[in-house]
Length: 114
Image (cartoon, rainbow, N blue to C red):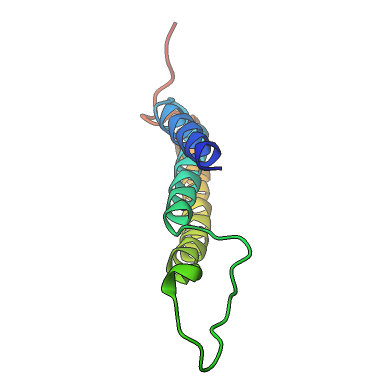
């Protein structure tokens, strides 16, 4: 499972960086979204997700922290998802406004001349 997570994070990061280097603004937005997905997967993987572990501490029993999943990375990922959604929406609005003003969707505002 670790190799699948590492490959997923690597593919998302590589694809996101490749799209960030493209000249169109929509590709830039999609690249930033892919990078945020890669970071979310990385944070979630660092939280050591356990399957079949009890979610609640029982009263009066000895507490073994290694038997439970750390909820902090999951909370961070949920917060990051909300923030990245709002940021993506803001970037799309700026993209549409920029396209309306310049009549092009290139990042530098100039079309390539062949």
